[in-house]
Length: 286
Image 1 (cartoon, rainbow, N blue to C red):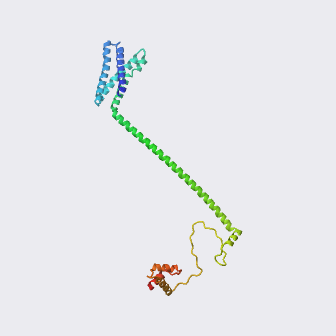
Image 2 (cartoon, one colour):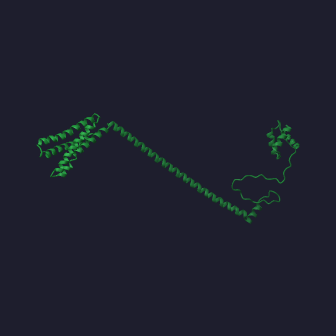
Image 3 (cartoon, helix red, strand yellow):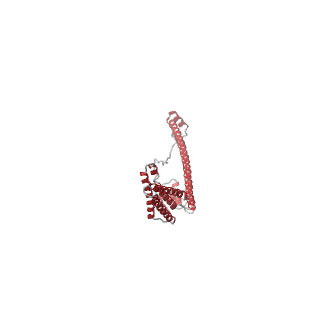
């Protein structure tokens, strides 16, 4: 996998070294003997290549030296400066020479990218483990999304059913209330009518002689029974009479009745006396 980054860097380095050597020989060859110009070009390329080799050795050992890196970038800048100066002083094709003056810097940048690649490279086992973890996370996310969608659809269906059932109940209640209201209105009209009331009175059986029963509407709603009030209050029993009645009820069975049983039978017989007087009479006779 490292060939993807190292091969472009090697090719760019070779091209830039050859170009730098050719430019130095052509440019300085007019001002000095060409062997001297060749030595200068080889010196620039050699220094660059030596620092690059040392950087690669340190990288293979997992180490890094800023001084060596600075020297290597210095050689690259010198080569670029030579190419730029040649392009600016060339009489012909200055633009073309200037266009290729960036190759030494580009070669150094490619070696930098290759170093970063090596420092972050992982083994196939680690890459397989990472891919497995990522796939597991994607699977879990997909299952969670599917579960949420299913729960949302179920909740929507439940709410729809509840809403429809509530609407049906409301319609039935409204219909029932309307029917009851109409029936009540019909009964009220029948009760208030002269002929209807007279006819109903004539067919109603008499309960008390001399009293004509009156037909009443049925009660719609909860009612509480009201005790009938007697016109004349019954006279209170004297202590002697109360004692006699209590004694008769108490000894009506064998063995004698308890106070609660006696009091229950006393009140069931329709007699009345306060609890205090009744208990006092029980104590006197018992």
